[in-house]
View (cartoon, rainbow, N blue to C red):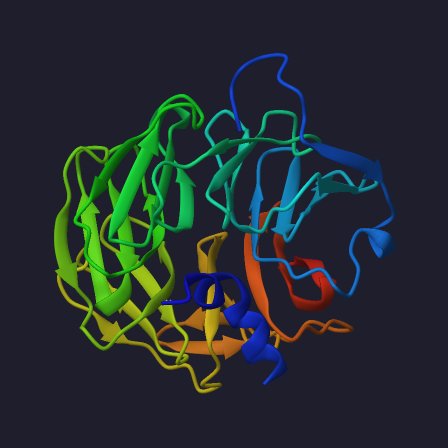
Length: 313
């Protein structure tokens, strides 16, 4: 099964048809740029995250850093080969990015420099988050969940070895976590990831992005454009209305409102049970995958180097 196609380049094709040790040497180079030169048309952004000072957007061999105060952004280029497919913020304000080539990348200086550590084993990593006490949690192929309490130096791995992919992982709070994956799989933990209970959205549903806004209420998108919602912690799921029918690749909670982004550069906002398109003047992209709440609104990023901070009134 071609995992990189599904997670990293699948959205692009459809659109067109770490570390903790002090003193460690950065594996990146950074330069201050203008908003217009932060990205190029060959950049394909795969994820976004934000702390109190900056937002970061990640892609192949690149991290874009956008300060919240309007200062000039930074273009950070990774030395060697990397394909960053996901990124998350930790409680201490640091960032962790996931490399398709079995690495996690860490930044402790607001995205200005990054260093890497290998993920364990030969399974393919597909999703990352930061959990309690700045721990790293990575999910991927072979139904694998791995975690590290020392920024990727050592790992604990939980895998059933089944030929199924886990795509997303989220800590809703210090105790409650959720993983989603192939065949509609949902795994829930209420003890900080020590144990997991398995349920299902349905065997024909392929989750792509997931967002729980509370332990009870969550949303899961798919490549078919279907967006499912649960109001009882995954006990049951209902289909919401997405009249665009376009594949959805990212979700964010922005001031208590849920937004989704996807194919064709579409941005949707949930209104009751209906997803309503949000028009962004002077902006377009073949696809959007990164979306994150920032002060005053949200940031979106995706194909052909497209990114924008959108103000919400």
